[in-house]
Length: 122
Image (cartoon, rainbow, N blue to C red; front, side):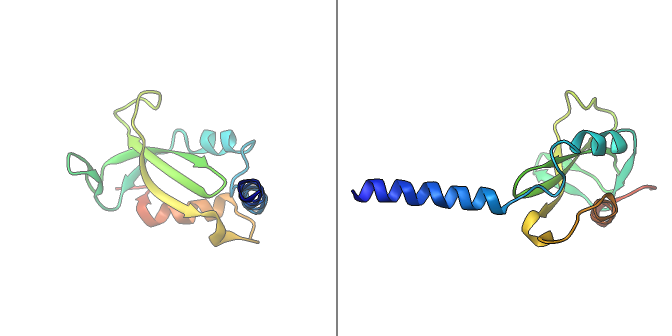
């Protein structure tokens, strides 16, 4: 009986969390966002240290793409010398969805986040 109660509790908790969370950028809108940013070139405002051997230096020209989940909005970047299809995306910016709860998230909001870590000119 205790196992059944625990499983019901876990199921209801998961259902509640899934219901409460929502993407900052809806899944259907994500391709349009990525198309908008696809050809834009940005420059890192500071070193991006992924590991001790994987560092993108300040001023490195990069391109970006956006990922949106139920909990996070992620902006990943890759050097312009690499192709998007084979590049390893480095997380440069993230936003926790709950920080924007009740607010409409727009491209203008995203641009403000991007401007914190990336510039349009070197």
